[in-house]
Image 1 (tube, helix red, strand yellow):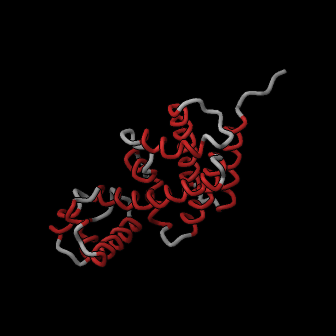
Image 2: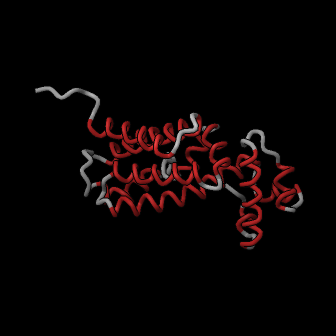
Image 3: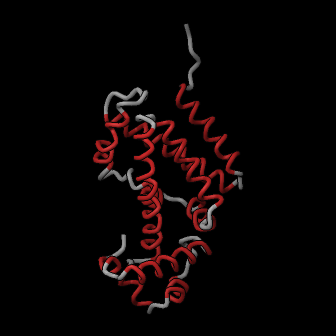
Length: 206
């Protein structure tokens, strides 16, 4: 995460720097991005960049966390609206994310992110699956889950369900970018996999 000096900046300077980061990370992956390009776009000295961020990966993870915070708010609202239906909420969020990621003006940024995704990036993007605070997040949303049809008996089980659904979600987004799928194709594939998880993989026996 950024250093305190970044948060001490006024809003305009923050926005200018964030815009520069988005432009550079849209041009190249975090591995190939250039700090020199970022400071040129932001019109700041190179030394200032390292007063705000530890390195370019730190800056990139910060951008993902901003989007993660936004998604978290939408997801929590959707859980409430769906009376705790976790599958419906994940489907809603996938449709929202894939439409924005594929059709939005930050397509190249997110394509670079998802096609080079690692564990740190996934944690920053989801924001609610960090090992140190996941338990707190589960407690915050469990009240909605308990109202829904999901068959879980403990918060630990709920944690595993979240991790499974999040993994499936990420793999579908990565696949959509890698195969250049349309929003409709990506949503169809995701719906098929959600249904399989929802109804189970074993045949019903008498």
